[in-house]
Image (cartoon, rainbow, N blue to C red; front, side, top):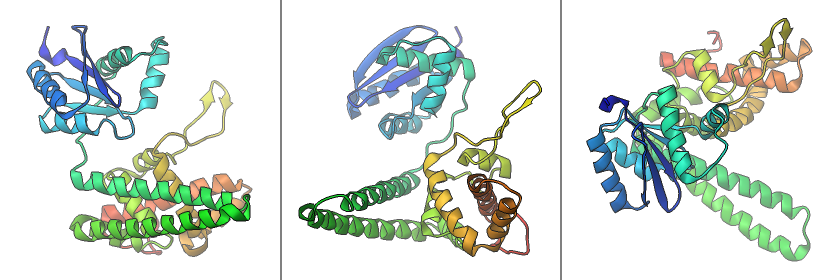
Length: 314
């Protein structure tokens, strides 16, 4: 057996790691703390695997992925939805931590996903702050909705919580602005993005944090990454409606709100929206097309390193 054929699947949970070695079929489990992870990395280094497959688990995977990357191992963090669909296609319906590790190894052996570099500490910090801000905004919206339906006795408590949330959000805004200001590359990107009418500080920070491919990928690729590229639904002589799906949901939600603003203040987006509505397109379809156009404009200004100019079509 060639060592290049060795694929490692690692299932991550809060307390333990489950590992599977393909094609050897060896499985083992260890505690998910710093010392056992160091031992796992040392053992995997000896195996010289072609890939180490880890499923994204909302941040739980960060410790083991960081250690694997630091050791120079070809680690791949995969989308859980892709793994679930692969499991269904493979007829693997049973689910345990050990079976999940085996499935990840099988996924890596069949599909050969390319290893991608782990974001550096500074980018991970920015992503954490942007994600936390989104969570607090969601809490704020929930509390405001509850305030309208509750009794006077609870209103005062909700108002206190809303004040506290506003303070935390304001502090996060300052921290995010400081991170962007202290990084010369991000500072330049932020300046270019903010030159586009309708692109505010929230979308700017989200694009920098969640879409590092901006300016490096084609317009079609960047739209697909964000989940605003239309996909065909054709079969035989049937021509189905095009629809968008997948992509980076947090980014898409922020892009949607920025596009609503842009339909009023950005002449290019406003003209596109009005033209589509006049042609009979539903509002949702028109807005989705404008989201794609706004993202393409963002991609163009970063790629060309040129501030937005309404005379230059995207």
